[in-house]
Length: 229
Image (cartoon, one colour):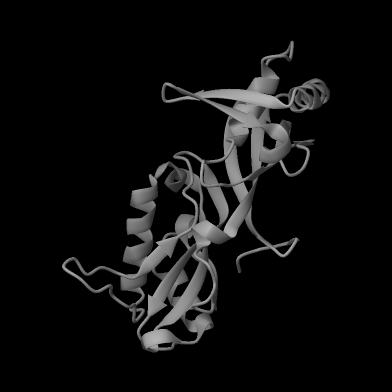
């Protein structure tokens, strides 16, 4: 490892009330967990030294995450399993680490490497809504483009590019769950709830999005798709 540093990739979850933390608050919570776990983290050089840590794509406030990631650099080697155990004990279960592995310094950063995100959008409604929402999603995707207004700005998404696979609709515990897979790029990505809400406007028996969870993140590597960890 360069300069005696060890790059540890950590997978963590963000659930329950903690899904309402902002990205900055999430970063601070993870840093506090690392300090409480007494992990020998490396510090950056310069006028404002701080923990050497880098996070994957930020989650929108209110969106839960089942497999989120950050890289933290350590000054000395500690077995990944020991670090994971210490991190799991030093944080609330809603934001606890669930996996850890050392990665090479030659690996691209998480923000550059992660190209695909998978979400589950939960909608209030029964079997009738499931069928009509599925048909409406097919129509929205077939239109080819989707205009989304956010914070006073309008973005137009080419759905053939934004969606690497078709949305899937199923029922669970009396609600409808839509699995939406989107591409992540430098210009941002399509929010899955925006796609589902666009489809709901064409459904006679309107449903309501009640939760959004990012279930997985993926790296595209030479035509194949894999998890970062």
